Image (tube, rainbow, N blue to C red; front, side):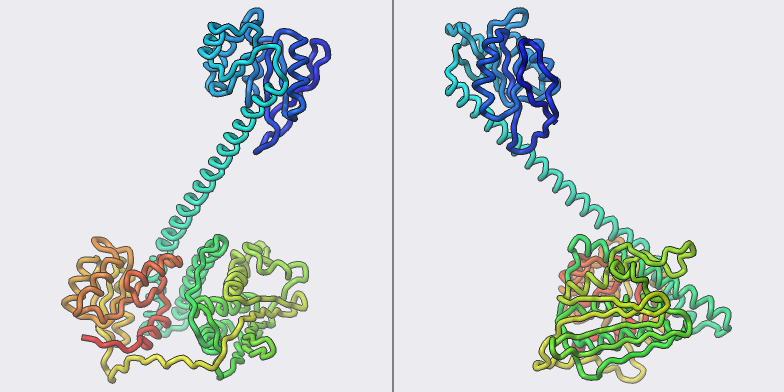
Length: 540
């Protein structure tokens, strides 16, 4: 804030008023002269310039103003009683904040010696009195414009520095979130594997199975919370990049719903799937489309009481060539006051103390963001509390004229399975994954470091390599590059199993040579399906 000078009355000055200075707005000009008649002249000449004019009668008063304000230019009389102009100028120059403020000396005695003394005192110009109004105005305008340009440049530099600092802070935050997710996901992997193993080989005693189901549900809930939190952050910063391809929306909706069926049945909920057998093609990211449908199913499951039912339906709106996905339930419904905000991030309708149905309120916000990234739209409807709810996605479809080539899969003779090399430094994750794969009949070898993994690959000649990224000695990127450069290993399928799940992590994995990128904790059903559907490739 700066102060605007007010016209004086005799020798009395009123208190200036506060005015903001930004960009090219008015600036401060200081004139110092001990003679009242000269001060009146300077005021009449400079006031038309439209800036904030301060006029005082002594060097002492000028120095006091310099403690409070910044000036574009100072007009300084040389011959003043007490502290003259030269002494005042030296003190101005000795003060860091005003050291570069331009000073124009005004004097009736303009001999060469005094002019030299003035320049030695820090003057940038010298005007003889009486001044020519046009000359004084022109000189002051030049210094004012230079001051405004410097101020504007300083503001732009400050804005640039703040923007760079914000970008750097955002980068560090993203890196921290990525590391946090990695550290949180690592212990979830062996927990999920242990649950799967207990289901496959454990005793079928009802109480143990019930406890096992509790662990399974809570581990999956924790994994979902981690993924939703990271995805919401990435969406907010526009950092979610889709890996689009032509895919069958009918198959995606049907398969995702079937994957959730056991969750609904375990909670005494009926799941109705109404999806056409004919393909509906979309240009989308299959992983994100599965996430969209999964989030809606998760939401319906959470807010529907036992004995209710949820319906998943896919229809072709031919008039608009739109694929319409709807998930409706007979659950607790949505209050009319809450309905407009259900897709807002961190907005959660259920705020009861027990939080029995609560959460972070991220799932539906992700649905909206990911749907819009696919060029679609999402809506919600409900007749009120106790009346259930329906969520609807509309996604643009592609022409069905060009059919996709059928992906050829590996046919494994009865009793024969892949040789799989698992490179994982977390012992619990490695051992539990090995046990699961052994139960499926796979020949699995595990190692815990990067160099040992590469050496094992050369001796074991695996058809599939499951490789962690963060490994001691040699990271997963280095391993996959070495594998691709070795003719005897290059045909192996190398799958990244990692807690780093950001889009840039996936791009880096594919760029390094990985065929697939799976984020921990790995759903064993998905891993089993992945291994069963690997495209055909020559093996050694």
